[in-house]
Image 1 (tube, each protein chain N blue to C red):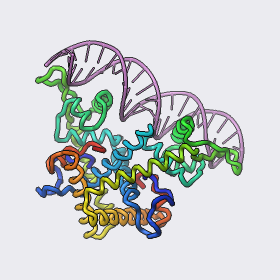
Image 2 (cartoon, helix red, strand yellow):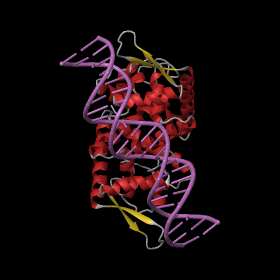
Image 3 (cartoon, rainbow over the protein chains, first blue to last red):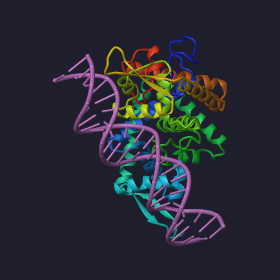
Image 4 (cartoon, chains in turn blue, yellow, brown, cyan):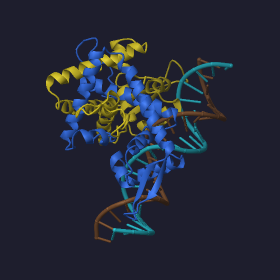
Length: 171
Length: 171
DNA sequence: TATTGTTATACTCTATAACTATA
DNA sequence: TATAGTTATAGAGTATAACAATA
């Protein structure tokens, strides 16, 4: 799983074959590490980065934000508190429902969100350059296919939703 | 990046194509989510799970553990404290160097480590069943290839090291 | 009554700095 | 002096439970 200490169900002896579970686990740690290092350059954590990412094209209530990020609403209160204190987001009272609060990016938050995305894409390009172009394309296509299949399977609508709704981790 | 809110450099209009960066980011969140949910069943965090994983075939000093997990030694003190309190690991004084402490799994910790790995593999199998078998194999092969290429590129030795040393996130 | 958001509280995880005990 | 590990401290991130305001 997380770690694949030699032994266990690692494939026989093939020098360059990892079990699917090992491969996916290691790949996920690799990508998360890249994400984390980039975020840390701006003093952001992964969850703060995800918050900014989610807000790039939304202006959700605290409640919706909790659902989008897969967190408890009280966790989101703290998350938004810290982001607001740093001038990355603002709370705006909802006019429709006086209980609700909308959260939206400040200009500063927006620029961080887009800069981060650009640099992450550059990192990934660099990583993928390790593969021949044909492999690169094939890998991207297979990953897309897997994500689409999984999302569909979860009852989530197709492409539109896939592109926007995937801030959540697991589901 | 983390999130791919519609717009930005998402590919033109292809209904089921994600940019490589989006695909990898989303996939990593998906896998981490699976990992996290499984860990939580045993009241473990991801880092505790990684700790157990690393110890499956090692008995490192606190210092080595810090390097393996990519954490500061003081963080490892706390991590091991909590794991020891729960009976998952034990500290054993080193006979070779009286300053050093070795950390090793208890039977309980070992059984959790292996059970977790098994269930994670089952989860991944289920996930991959969304793909036709040929895609499944191709994806695994490409991921392995990418990880091997990346590791080699980092100056890390080949298969042996790949299989054991990947507890670390980024590098 | 039900829902939205915050507060109070508690715990994990992480790092930096200072310290103890070896080497 | 340098290294191994712990402690003290501070802060982020998370959850549960209780609460206020509004629906």
